[in-house]
Length: 493
Image (tube, rainbow, N blue to C red; front, side):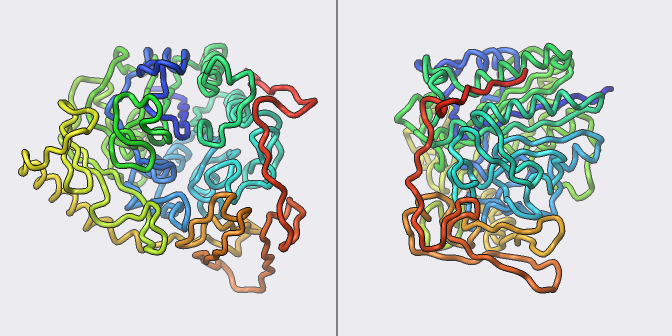
């Protein structure tokens, strides 16, 4: 059977309740609603409640606490580079692979998207535009991104860029199957958008997905393309916005922090009628599922924590009874933000949720997780707690391990290091530098070759033209309209 093309769209900080098909009374997402209606929908699908851990789990099939990418900075955003990734598997099976947008799994060798298997990539650094590692002066419009490792200017609004470049890349593929990952930084803050997309609350991503799907239909690719849509964690706004009845938000262990939409459409793939699939599933299932759906040979080193849910897509056979885990963070005691240790996790088992080992919720009777019933079901708590402790004994020690950035190779020369990767220091936001936070840190490095190295220490990026003692101008992002003389750049599709 001919291998399918694969397109995976991953949005940033878009919650389960941010779609009108999930009941949002204000936002309108007409095309995502259409995709929802055409897809197999995993309605009990979970990821990590923060972006980097989710992305690492999707790419490796291993829990964040096993693969090493457990947090967004502080030396914890780098997965074990010896692990095969999803892009590696597609490449080894003859696919063209491309990544467009947010990466957040390392900006230096051997963690850049082109290192673990993506043959072509246009990506933004660290967590996104305005992060400490970002190209100085980026503001969502006409920005500079890394194209296969080289800084390159791109015209237009950032979301337009990701979809436009992905569409052009797909159009140039010829007969070879492709795997395209489009990872938007929208709707992550800062919320800077053109006026044309501010009213009437049309979602920017929704519009771009519609254009991309029209392009696939025009090129005769739609029916043979495995098309997937997912978000990387729960809403960042929590209960202050519509949250589909869930408790919690991004960074939290309650349902609203890690339950996300996951739509799969493949017209010629034998996936059956569009429907809701209620089995509890997890981001670590993503890699083994795609390898099975696409009939890919797997490397011997591939050891996934997840299971393939491909058979569940093609039949009514339920997924094997199991428990899955949600935990992320770091261990540095000097910075309490998102610090993790034994017990700071959630265990998911069919209808049950065990939060931090002592809160138990029945999701069938209490989907809003309002009543802790641990005292009413001690045997359930005991069983889930024992399973968690066994899992922790297997992965917990990895929080003391840091993956080194490699310097001294022709693959990346020069290497541009950022405070985002300081071990144990939270310094990935522009406020940490512009606000003159008096802090410093160290990088975990591996020196590939002995020799004489030239080192430049900069407070501001080289492209800023600022000296180490100079203050930076106030960051004024473009919002509402494009700069004078510039037109809104739309997709080529």
